[in-house]
Length: 268
Ligand code: NAI
Ligand code: 15L
Image (cartoon, rainbow, N blue to C red):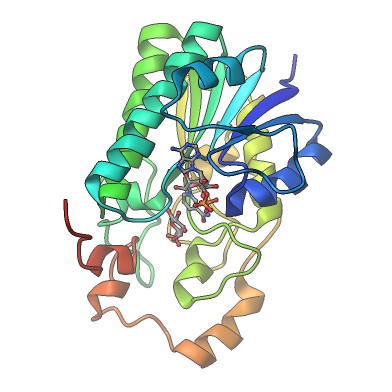
């Protein structure tokens, strides 16, 4: 049977807020979890991914988990270690102990951020391109994908790892014309990831069907994802304001954009 009760971690965040609005229409009853209180949701669980007892209770009885909680940008390594690496491990352990069969993991394009972006007629970036994290943040997503593979191989727990591009209401940069995932397509992709049979551990890119797309969406489509949106209507205005991406600028040369060139955050 299709999963119905889904734990949404990171429910107070930007993507969590968008998905709280959109996923119920796909038939889900959401249980919410975040470090911060979730506005308008008094039943939400307010707890840290470091709190194993709270996690164990949070995952009990759900059909699946959408794991969005964590630090969503570059940060000092110790913080990434705690929230994203240990936190994701804690979540998987709780899910294994409670017999939850499937996780949808919010990975990121920054797991492959150093990959040169395609130009002109270059082929789209395949899903099995070698991982090249561009930050400690991207490194934690790379870890999460390995953790997911390990829990599938070792315990038969399934995951779809979604290397999300940029999921915001509208694209706000020229780079986002290539990597944008509309919130409605995000909900479609999460729904496909929750319902496709026999996913084992499947890695997909998460974006809309953008005209300027940089990566291959076929693994997402193989789950039944059928994106309906394209950033192209935003292109003229954004390019007029910001100019085309300059391939000679290192911040525009690779998938990860400015994550590649931003100085590291000290202290480690
Ligand atoms: P966000 O920063 O707005 O939300 C993250 C949420 O996680 C926050 O509400 C925060 O309180 C919570 N959180 C952080 N540490 C926690 C902890 N230790 N325990 C419990 N909760 C904790 O980020 P956003 O944009 O909503 O992203 C959600 C997820 O999707 C993140 O994992 C991010 O890395 C990933 N992602 C998002 C993209 C996007 O375009 N929004 C792109 C690629 C990946
Ligand atoms: C991410 O992984 C971030 O969580 C999100 O805030 C955006 O910066 C996105 O990548 C991006 O690459 O635009």
